[in-house]
Image 1 (cartoon, rainbow, N blue to C red):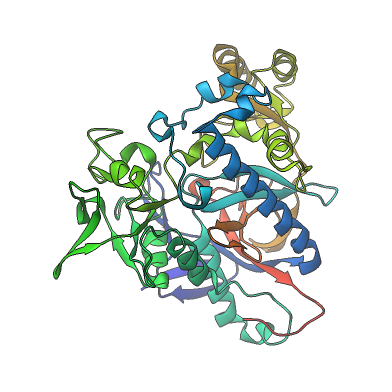
Image 2: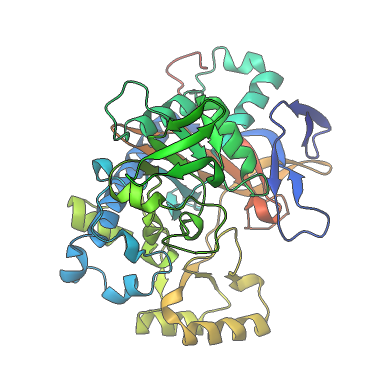
Amino acid sequence: MQSEVLPHSGLRTHSPAGITFRVYFEDAGVDRAMPFDLIPRVIPKKEWDRVSKGLQQRVRALNLFIDDLYNDQKIIRDGVVPADLIDGSEHFREQCRGISPPLGIWAHVCGSDLVRDGDGTFYVLEDNLRIPSGVSYMLENRQVMKRVFPELFADSGIQPIDEYASQLFDTLASLSPRPVEYPNVVVLTPGAFNSAYFEHAYLAQQMGVELVEGRDLVVDDENNVSMRTIAGLQPVDVIYRRVDDAFLDPEVFRPDSLLGVPGLMRAWRAGKVALANAPGAGVADDKVVYAWVPEIIRYYLGEEALLPNVPTYKCSVAEDREYVLEHLDQLVIKPANESGGYGMLIGPHSSAKEQRKFARLIRADPRNYIGQPTLALSTCPTFVTGGVGPRHVDLRPFILSGSQTYVTTGGLTRVAMKAGSLVVNSSQGGGSKDTWIVDTSTGGSN
């Protein structure tokens, strides 16, 4: 059992799950405790209902967009998005052309990052459609709070999140190609050295399904997927895969991959197994494609976006690019496919040398970069040395898409533990809080 330190609060609790996050670039070691702050983030349910509708709208449009890109590409032919937007996408998979997965859904689990500006408006900062992580920390944060402050959950109207695991299982089961009452679902992990292995094991345990590695699965000549067990081969219907596309199937992607399953893409294409999230979904998990989401929503749904994007300058557009190059000291510059807060320039906190470097990068590959203003990100009270102080936060709710759509009542609030920092990512020292969606019209919660 691993200690969970509640930083600067003077309190220490223990999590039976042993919450850790693996960081690959720290000299002090690779596994560290996930910092957790005791002061919750509170959002009124009435406000959250509007946010939830906006998230559902966004994911519905993005799934239509991905399906279109791998089939008819009408949105390109109609000139709504430029062809080079996709041609330059690192995560567009030619191997997925002509495939339409069950229910037409590619991104079954989405984690969209939200930020609140100084005017109180929630903005979408980015969409995570490949292998979004963090939901296990959201669930464990709630369990810690319920153990430490059980009386607060008796009649305060805090909305429950405990059903996530069952909702995830129902979502996955609805994708099964076999018409059976209880399809065989597995969680495919790269293994114990992956940064999110805690989450893989946690979700498998919570859903009551097997946690497997690539070597545990086999695809036969008829494209059936089976799991090796001590009782022999058992059929597999749905794979919640937490392995990157490039390592998923050495027959199709990287031939040196030892993490994937040879023949898995054959089985998926043949409709013998469902994969969540589907390979190729990452084409919409691109910070440059993000800039076009309002147009994508308008094109596929005939609606205006309920949740606005952060104002974004597209460096592939000449006029936007010139503005970005002239205002590097004022903007946040993001590359298309980096994650974890890496590869960014935060203009107001950057040096002239760093700005010159990014100017060269943008000119060399303008499609790969966007610029955004530095928002006056909201802060939450947080335990700090000497008492309580403000720290910048974002919020990652999770949207499940299957035969039904579920949005978590809240999400993972991430906290920049360093004073003044805007980087909340766990890989760079960020912590987290429990997020309370509170319905003041009713009492009681789970």
